[in-house]
Image 1 (cartoon, helix red, strand yellow):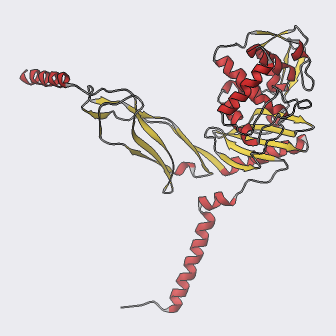
Image 2 (image 1 turned 90 degrees about the vertical axis):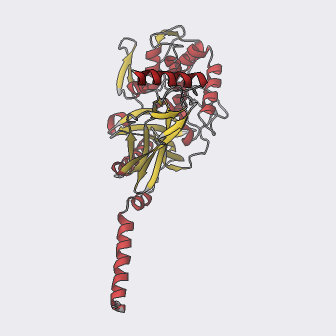
Image 3 (image 1 turned 120 degrees about the vertical axis):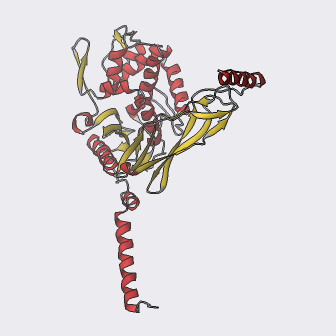
Length: 390
């Protein structure tokens, strides 16, 4: 029997240590952990991937702070939901009230009794952050701003926004006492608003006009013009809130939401948002799987012998470069027993990357199948006998 010398053992041990270090340096998981979210000059910050809602990085994200005009994301969400529900339309004409016309700050200078379409008011809120337009839309939908604000708070609760309380539709904070939200909550309502893709046709506008071209609008979000992939969403600033933004951008099929609250200036806020977006795009990617057609599953004791099955699309965020390393595993029995209801769970699709499960989605029944009764069984036997006899 031949045994290695101590010298050879020491060399082998040294080589093993080097290999372990190299593997640690270049493995995807280590690379992902090494790149922490960069620091930015803000009271709070958060970066979210929109399709999954995954938080990629955060700082002081749950502190309730004044949001200034970023408030209008919730106002816009309720407007978009009212449009899609058919409660209002883009062509509706809205008559400005004295209350709406009295708003200060960013505005389109509505006159009491002036009529303007929902679409032009919507555009004015998104692009120019018009406070008067936000109030006019709220009154058109709910009859009063107070009722609309109550709906804003109810919707915030539905979205799980735990550190939010709204007192108005536009974020003016010189007379309010507790008009607050957090970076995490802003990301949640931003994601909900992005679920209405039509909003991007307005938030991506750099310059436009209303009143038959007589009044110009310029986007308060300079990233729309100067940051590649930027498509929204809302800026805000007051002396109490500082400079805030929910900045959205899309590259290579990945939509990010960068929330910055309480920056000391507009340029610092914009640079902070760009820093977070750059970091997100450099370090992460989205893996997306579209469902394939699955063979129907055999149903024991059912009035139908087979049941259609299927599953929902799946996506997840992975460290950059790992999106192409995902394998798909289908876990499903050869047969199931009746009765079955549409939506019943019969299996699972698992998504695995480097031996680690990164997500899953259920395989569900596409239809209901009742259990076959005595007479049904007898009928099958009779039909089989007739067919056999022919």
